[in-house]
Image (cartoon, rainbow, N blue to C red; front, side, top):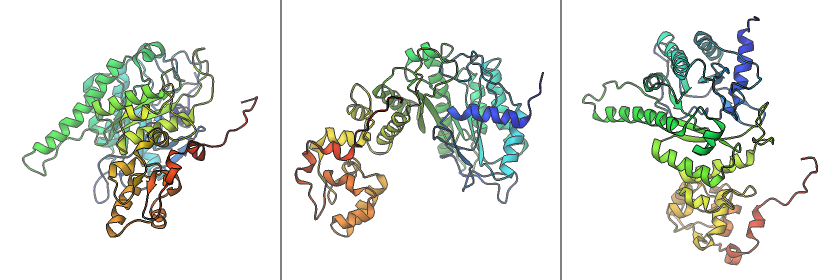
Length: 416
């Protein structure tokens, strides 16, 4: 048997991890080793950013513990029946890599996931051991994100939360029917139970902090960066309205920090019922925009889904503009009088722009030239706003308004 070198393992297992999009490093508590023991920090710059061939930004040392897997999820390149090159790190090897990369200033932390080997509990124990060793044996204060195994014992998930900044349990597919079809070893009930266990740990810590008698008393940490999940887009027939509905329930029910949407990339030896086409990256982008509308702009998932045709978001214009075009009775709004909620519904205005508008209008009525200095895309907003020296007139109700924003039609290629 040929022994695989550490560099070869890194090449295989870093590449195998690129399909997991949920690798953000935000939201955790501030920690630094400056003036203290240990090494590492969750503050400042220094996270290495690299990009996958399909354009995703990857932060941290992002690897799998192993791409061996006893599960046979049909959408996964690392499924048990896939003919891919396999490798496996030991926990000590991952610890060594993380520390070496950090000392060379390549990374700020670790994102660690894994295929399932032997059993979910065994795999989860290995992941937890990496985080435990970094924290306790080496005093590592940098960022750690662990992908938790939904089928693992809840006590192992609790142990993961004590060492990791963020935990994530991937829901994989947005409907129970699709999960049964494409990932028969997994169930939505098990995944949601794991999410509930993580939420319980986070809530218990918050309650303990509030109820402590001595303010400086130390409360055991538990995933201060919260939890996230990922849904694969385009592997099954689920439409965008259903995806947004599932995401809305996850945010409300489990207090998720983020739902990530991952465009399905064709995998080797794929099943015949999986789409053999390039990743639907524009669709993925529109879902992120719709997600932002619900999280930061005050929209409900049903409102955004109401703009869809056949349950699918428009690809040629963003979902906020699509909503405005379908709800023209809400416009135009007066930038000098409108509430924050109404301003956030104007295409081209985001939370920062709205904050600047509300601050500026305290000192006088806003004119178009003043607005253009504090709003990034005032041209997009013009049909939907009134200013001191501007009124859109009939532009708001113009039949061809959509064509002003949609890209011109392109000739399709015979070889696309």
